[in-house]
Amino acid sequence: MRKRRVKAITLIEILLVMSLIGMAVGAMQFGVHKLLKKEAFVQEVRKIRNMVAFAQEVMIDTKCDLSLTLLHEGSDVKLLFSSTPELPERVARTLQDITVRHVETLTFNEAVVSELILNFEGHLGIISEGVIEIKSKKEKSQTIHLRGFPGRVL
Image 1 (cartoon, rainbow, N blue to C red):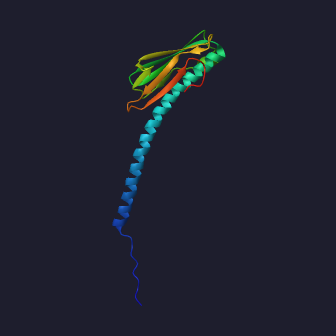
Image 2 (spheres, rainbow, N blue to C red; image 1 turned 90 degrees about the vertical axis):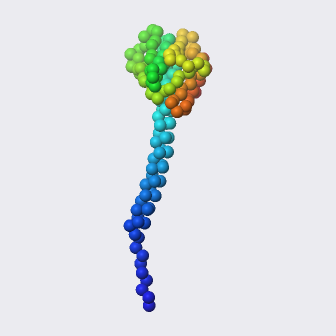
Image 3 (cartoon, rainbow, N blue to C red; image 1 turned 45 degrees about the vertical axis):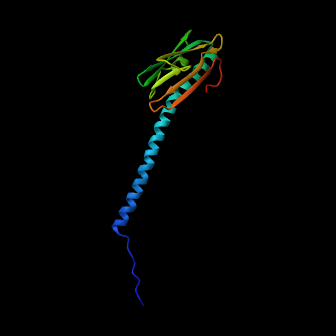
């Protein structure tokens, strides 16, 4: 009888498999990084959308007039709040000024603006009406629709 020879895995084969696995992981990592950057911009815009919705709720609950100012400075947008009359302290603490990053342009009704003031009039129950468009450096854009009356912020 003939002895069967067992063929061992060579070092070259092991290195080849390891390099293929490394290239696959590298390709996946690039896609994940790109996805995370896009999601970071969406999260930043969500901050603005949430603060507009919260200001609207405060206006309805307290019947106070609020103004939300969006200041575009470089690649940041600062959200500044003011109210008439003064809000209760527990509410005022939640309306802190916020900075939103990664914003290239800020437009309101298709006009590029560096300062945007949104008014929430509590005694009348109305808000500013229009469309806010926020763009990042990579031409990704998000919109916020304001209908002029309290409702879901889209």
